[in-house]
Length: 207
Length: 207
Length: 207
Image: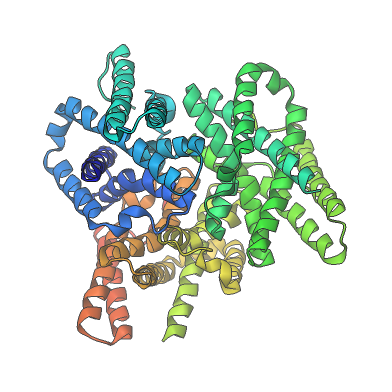
């Protein structure tokens, strides 16, 4: 079970890093700048959460796998940048999986240091969404999360579903899946209603 | 006395949260985005101070009243958003009260962890002013504090008055009032000279 | 030896503070705003590093000399602002010295808390480059580091040279000089190839 969470955490990191690198390439940043944006997008949310709840050094610094995954994401981004844009549906799926899991990870870590459920929900949203916020601030764009798509709302709903289910049963893995599905359905419906697919990853192009 | 400080701290949080939500509404952010901006504006300065001086988890996470106050501010902002703009004088008064008190709270907390007076003065300014700075960065505006109004100067002057009086007498409450009055007079005179009232809360509209 | 590092650290702080103040003056910030930008540029990178690796209160808060140096930089900036622009070559030299040393300081501090070499290299870049990034974010410019000049690359290369040499010999001071020279040569060549001299300090003027 823990292994499974860990793997999806790395998948989320991978997808977020790609999202950052592609945004940076699109803004004509050089390679180093793009790598920095990739790193920040991937680990920014979790780092901010760790700072606020007092868990330092921040988590990803203590595990090489995060760096490997980000490095791999950079290589993939540059190698397949044209193809990735065509894979939007796949990216959307993994991105949604990533934010769902990041929300739950943030929640659990915050509860683990003894903070309350409302704070844990907020830190879930921070974990899932603030990597993208920092990416947008650094690339001088009003953060997407504030403008379109109910990104934060989806995270929050997923977190509430998870917390709620945890109170009434012991099947953590089922609760996680239900929570993920909540995030996914909310995002899917919201995107559908606007007749456009994903947004997070290539939105900035249209501005 | 402590109760009194605590209450004004909550009032400051309330006013800052309104300021954030109104700015976000004005920028056409959705409800969730506006709430996030409200929270960040209200607790951002204190959080940054807590991070820098090593007091984590940051303070507001340990006390539900801050969340209640912010929630209430969100409701008030949406319900009375048109009226609030007409209440500018009242807002200006509470906002100034808020920054005066936030300055003193920041000062005292920093001295409390054993740091020096100059650092405490800087952390006073950070507490009072950086919630607004983070709000402006997230909404992609050059922070107001750097462009107009002697916001930071007023905080700093208030802090210096407080520290100075603390050296020569024991009447903390009088020292606080004198310090608040300093902040208020400086802001009032500065605003008067420009023939415009408040600024912090609705300034962005004119850009 | 330690004294020597300390002195160059203060020189780096001084040059970075000037860079911040001049950028702010150029943006028509008032005196207080300019001082804040100067402080942030000078201590922002080291502060972010200290936060991430869990070394709080952040370093500069515990040593008055950093404040004195920044104060002096502010006075110098305002007094000689027209002359400084003509001294670009000298500024470029000290700025490069500063980032070279900040990289090594960041490296060593991070290794000192038991983190790995790749993380230490990243924290070296953060120390040297993120003061400028925060300055650019606050003045609402896409950070220079992402747009032009191989600033981060130079830091990274200098850090790698230092780490590499540390593995094979004991002459720390020589390793530092080699590392500094690496940073300097990379920046010099990169600037030369674009037929323009420094950029960091006065670039924003042209936008």
